[in-house]
Amino acid sequence: MTLRLSIPWREARAPVLHGRRGGGGFKAVPAAVAGSSRRSGRRRPREEAGLKRANFGDSPGLPTLLLLPQLLILLFFFFIPSLRALMQSVLLSDPFGTNVQFVWFDNFKTLLASGDYRQSIAVTFWFTVAQNVLTLGSALVLAFATDRIVRGRSAYRTIILLPYAIAPAIAGILWAFLFNPAVGPLAQVLHGLGIAWDPNLNPTDALILVTLAASWKHICYDYIFLVVGLLAVPVSLMEAAAVDGAGPIRRFVSIALPMLGPTIFFLTVMNFIYGFFETFAIIDAVTKGGPAGATNILVYKVFVDGFVNLDLGSSAAQSVLLMSFALICTLLQFRYFDRKVNYGV
Image (cartoon, rainbow, N blue to C red; front, side):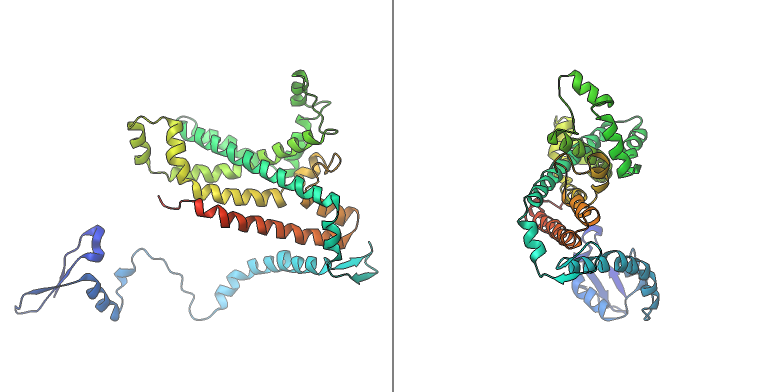
C-alpha cells in the first residue's frame, strides 16, 4: 500500500509513504527515489497526461509520403536553382550560350572592382536599414495604439492589415501615383510647401519614395507579431505599474517593450531578409532602379544584368554574393544582438 502526500507546486520534493499490510508502520521515502523505482517498471498512462505524440509505426513510408511535397518544392525551387547559379557564377558565356568558358573567380573579381556594383551595395545597405527602422518603429506605434483602444479594436486591426493583401507591384504603382510630380496629390502638397519633389530626377527623392513604399507594404507583417506579443505581457505587471503611478507610455517602454525583445529580434532579421530579396517588384514598379542607379539595389541589379543585359555569368555571381551578404548579416545579428535579448518573463 502506498500513500502519497504532495504539494501541487512542489511535487518533485514531496515524500512518498510506504507501508506494509498488517502493521509495521510507514516509512518516508524521497520522491526522487520513489520516482526512480517507478520508472524502472512499466510507465503508467497517467504520467503522460498532456503529451501528444504522433506514432507512425516502424515503417518510414507514411512520414516520407507526408514530407514528399515539401521536399519536392525545396528540390526544384531552391536546391537545383542554387546549384545551377553556383555553377554559372564561374562560367563566362555569350548571350545565346553557344560559347561557354570556365573562368574560375573572374566574375567575382570583376564585380568587386566595379564602381556600379559597390554603389549598389551601399544603396542596398541604406535602403534595408531605413526600411527596417521605419517599418518596425511604425508597427510598434500602431501596436501600442491598438492596445489602448477599447471600442472598435477589431475594425482598427482590420484596416491596418489591409495593405498586406495588396501585391507588391500594386503597392509600388499606388505610391508612384501618389508622389508623381505632375499629377500626384501628395506631390502637389509637397510642392505647395515649397519642396521641389521629383523622384524622376532627384536620386534622394527616389530612394525616399521606394523606402516609404516598401515600409508601408511590410508594416502589417511586423504589426501582427507585435500585437500577439503584447497579448502575452502579464496584465498583473501592467496593473501594478499603473497603481504605482506609471503612465501608459512609461508602462509600454519599461515593461512591455523589454518583454517584446525576442519578437523584435525576430522581426529585425525578417525585415533584413525582406529588404534584400522581396522588394524587387516595388523597385521595378516605382523607379526601375533609377535615376542614375540611385535605387538599383542588389536584387534588382541581378535581374537587369541577367535578363536585360544577358550577362549570365555576372548575374549568377551577383546572386551568390547576395545570398552570402544576407547570410552574413543574419549571422551577425544572431552573434551580437541575440545576447541582449531577454527570453525570460
